[in-house]
Image (cartoon, rainbow, N blue to C red):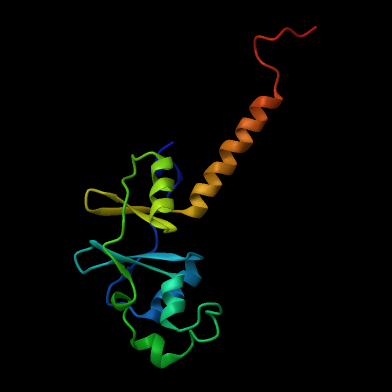
Length: 152
């Protein structure tokens, strides 16, 4: 199974000059927790997570309470809170390699890059969904009689 089989293709992204408010609005709109950050040439320059946003709001637990704070959310640029030069993966990489990279680096998402183009994002949720799918298939396979066993 490759990363391309489990990733979210064409993920929502944000420009590096976007604001914290715009990032929060995109995360809410698309029900996601990570946004690839792009520069003016369409190149990936970072990633911003909901945790980065909570930290910027100085609220590690309750994000919704302060995100309406116009002064902070309208003026703070994404480039100042993002993780620059994020670890990336290619779409033809094995899915278990993505999982290993996330575990080894204590991160929960990887932008998926083909050449210099962002083509997707893979998250721990994508890995878990893939695991559940494989597990269900294995259970279903093992519940069926084997093709070479005789039925009497």
